[in-house]
Length: 517
Length: 74
Image 1 (cartoon, chains in turn green, cyan):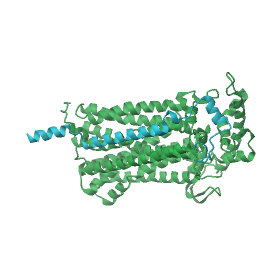
Image 2 (image 1 turned 60 degrees about the horizontal axis):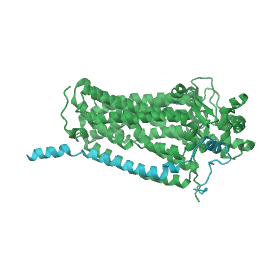
Image 3 (image 1 turned 90 degrees about the horizontal axis):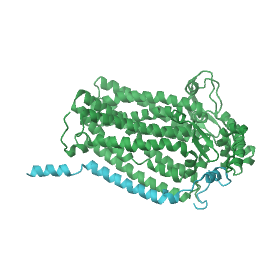
Image 4 (image 1 turned 90 degrees about the vertical axis):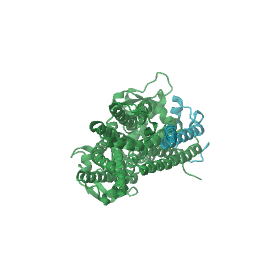
């Protein structure tokens, strides 16, 4: 019979919906800013070709927006059903940013997207430009709140655990909002979205030049995409470095797993450029290393060590033992009105989550043996192979984007966009930003395992006790639903790219008399 | 006359993209409604109380990471 458990199924379902939803998000983030930039050029110069560009790229933006809208709501469904214990445990913290994001997405973004499409002939040029900027700002602010919620799962700051309500409760919203992980993630993620938007324009512009169609719009689009894309691709790498630094401070196991670094290296630690990680033998074969690089990325110093997986497992064993002290004390006070934890036990509560890892091994964790504590500590190691290769492919693509956009910038500056090899390379690169963005999510979320909230709640304890057959059937339903949407999305995108900028845009058909400026 | 009629027809007919997106959004709403009703509605949710969470997190019966698909109710 099947050995798929409810935890794996629930994780698989959430991962599928999150990865699918995130196919739409980066393009919305990037293209909305590019639309605002192009419309600003139109307002400043009065040249109608820029308005035509905004309308054409705006049509493709509209398809992406319409396809993507509500694909994320299925994750909210899952919070209530598959992840009920998690939702209760963190609802006070998690609910606020998600609610704000909902308001941003549905009211601010939705309203201005409507005005963008149907306001061309009803508003002045300047008013419409302001609307386009508000679409871009609204989209980016939505991303901020989602990443604030996600960053709290990576680095749970500004909260305390209340044993009476069995909830994490906000003690400082300021700390939650200005969580360094949230800030680093936000700028890194939106920059990746800008790269996606720029690559979209670059690739489709290259397609038109290869076909000798819509060349004026294509050249201008490539010029905008090249400069914006180059700046964004550089930002992604620089801001990704900031993400690496925050992970080096708060998620040491994730950094060690990304590096497949089993032993603590003397400071400054080298960065493994390439190698073959071997989790069984706990080593990396044929490692090619860059001296000092990891020490600089993870600690920003030359004298601080980067701890290896083996040492971190030893530390986890100590934290499990410490957490058991808190566990025993909490079991006594829970349910007794007015009862509080003894003062001397409070420091141990920060390690309570580590003790809970033992729940995956035996129910009466107070009686755990040394071997079981070691086994629980070993479970804090995420999948090293997936993280090692996922991270390297993502970073490799990041540097490729810099090179491609730099080349596009050079060729467009010197009016040499007739190079077929470049145009073909640009066209073939179209899917790569999505690959990089999805790999980024996999590294961030898979690297957080075995935790649903880092160091606080193991993933398997956040899952509801619902029938596995229900999750399996709904997972099948999601696959069918999302596959259909993906096919329709591709069909519409290809159809309207082929029609090109000459096809009438949805607003052009309405024939509303133009308003005088 | 014929041109005016064509113009009026074009002006009232929705753009193909508007029609296509409308259809997709309608499909989405129906699909989400069914998914919600059959798998995520209130009847499928676990009743969560502080005691329930305590039992799930601290109690002896927890959702084991190796719990097979054949578990009771599954």
